[in-house]
Image (tube, rainbow, N blue to C red; front, side):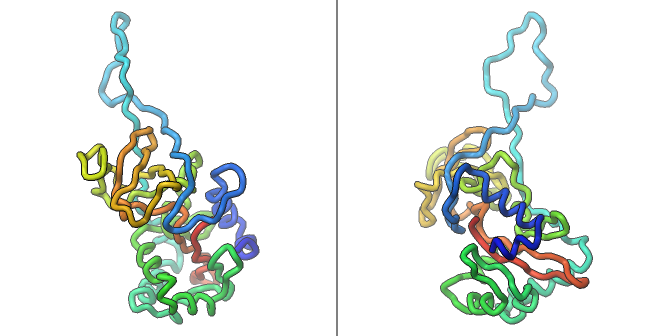
Length: 255
């Protein structure tokens, strides 16, 4: 993986920056797990329309509301030359589970993991193996947008839009607009959480649990349905333009 991405400085820098948010060496992350440390709080903002306290007024000693950053999918790739045609072919191959068709969209030495797995033939083998569930991973990526950096494309969009102060090993993207955070499992709604990034304790994370304890960027603690959480180091697809079209140069998870 390192050799492959070294040919593309922007992609290598982006992957390395995201993978290196924590200090020291880190074990490989999986699509169902992250590392510890919750995202740092965002700067507080004054509520709109409220006047500053006058000279004789004491400022209320209460927490100020904070902005909630949202990371809803965007499509920054649509206007890139050749991208609409590439995406149409990508969607078609995924829809009918055409491993050979997907391989034709990939570079001959496409990176598939950080242990040296690569190549379009290996991609076909893994796609044809139901144990890998790679078609499911591709299905999950498609609606999550696309980002462009240095001429390269990344799906999902959030992959190249994670704030620098967030530890991606311990962070999750909350999927869907209407996902809520509960005060406790089965309890009352504490906040709307759709398309925000929350922190988890990976030591407690269980993909089979109905809900996961999370911490928001401003320190609020609650519970979110586990199926609505996606690791920031989950599968992503990296593509680069070549000869008027696009090639998939990496389809990979972890760090």
